[in-house]
Length: 81
Image (cartoon, rainbow, N blue to C red; front, top):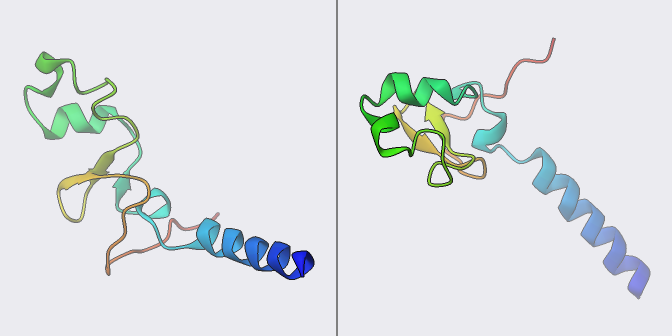
């Protein structure tokens, strides 16, 4: 019985790793400096590069901050070269 649980856990982990999330979306601006350019005055509050932003990045499609685990219907994976 424990073997089946392990396999189910592995399948779940694989799904989680491949799920369509903002972290792997082409619209997510990976460069943190784009936040300061897009949100004037952000650096004044020391939030542009601090813990309050953390791993959030700018979604260029929706023009808003997104966390890596966020999702939306317009997800488009980053093209692999």
